[in-house]
Length: 434
Image 1 (cartoon, rainbow, N blue to C red):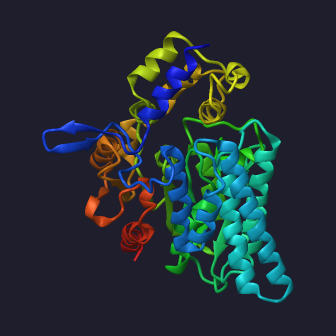
Image 2 (tube, rainbow, N blue to C red):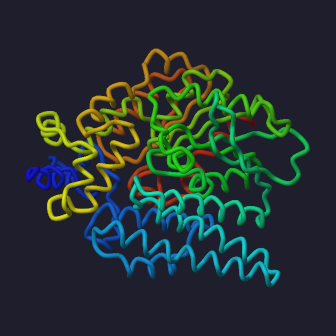
């Protein structure tokens, strides 16, 4: 297994968000990029992006730059355990502050602290060992702090366990207290490593302020679902799960059945599209960004050499767990474990093979009759841009918004300019419904 470090170094270099390749006009993005805006706080590009991700939630009360940067001082370069420890400590301190303020009768301040604490627990959970029960505990603390914080907010929140066969899908229904009449509703889900709580900060709160009900849910294999069921894995066809969510939505008197939209963020762009093509009761779809072929998307990130190496010589989950850190540094172990575990496969090679099923048939996209909006940044790479343009062309009522560099929304999912992201998505949606 002495080949592992060389392979994995190539893997992580290939997904560095700052990497570009030359062109006659300067530089162009590689196949896939997180964007070209870097904080450069960490040399480790993934940690740098995750730090910006936490800072982005500040726009809706999901963080404070001072608190986040203070936690970052305690993180060792490229060490996932130190990241989780730093954000866990911050989350606990901020949660304690919130609960202390609540005892003193300061409900608004308490609610604000609890919502920030929820974001920090999510950040700790992100770099947590996916095989450890402790990671799931951090996730449940995130959920608890979020619910308690939302109960002190201007909105009403209901904790959900949406029936799904013999199982259930966790989530939240959030609405205005004055919800006597049916309202337009945004259903939203995140992607590979996001959570329902994060989607509140990413788009939910902005939708609530615009008069929407918000239904957040966790599908098979997603982080919030795996907090309850460690055996849950990604599925290529998400339409059964979405059908259960829409069934639930249509049972609610607060929801106008003629004004239901679905929003998918990051890899949720695949989940949402895969589900939407089988759900005619939707009235609009927003995917940020559109992912038609998840395998092509992933392969663009890691590059052909990574794929070729693991097709020739596999690396199993058991081997990943046993390799000494000198051969397999913790940050590489974390990412490869998450990759295999989320797809429910025993090795890297079998995971890459399983990705072949994660594509949405073009004829099903063409059959969608409702309006559909794609959103993508011009610096996110050639593959996201090409898939987004295919989506626009295929969808009967498709449209596409490409965030130009000068917009200040250059990072994946517009984490560096959330107000503009909301304006594009929700103004478009208002125009479909009004």
